[in-house]
Image (cartoon, rainbow, N blue to C red; front, side, top):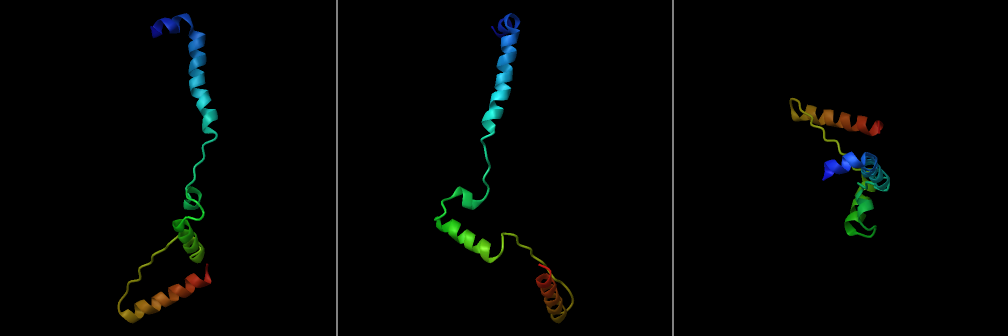
Length: 91
């Protein structure tokens, strides 16, 4: 059946093929991706309110964990204090 259709009406098959490829492109133009929790839930949702409060309090959701190792507790504490001062002076 299909081979006869292609042989008899190649132009129509070509146009139908192009339509199958081109029309979804126009439909996909309206698709948008929302990845923020605030965009996916109502603004008065308790989880959104908590997330927003924490986000504002800590200036974003980025977290950096550092491990300080060394010999002796005193040297580690001194290194940690120096590191804290450096981080605070270079936001």
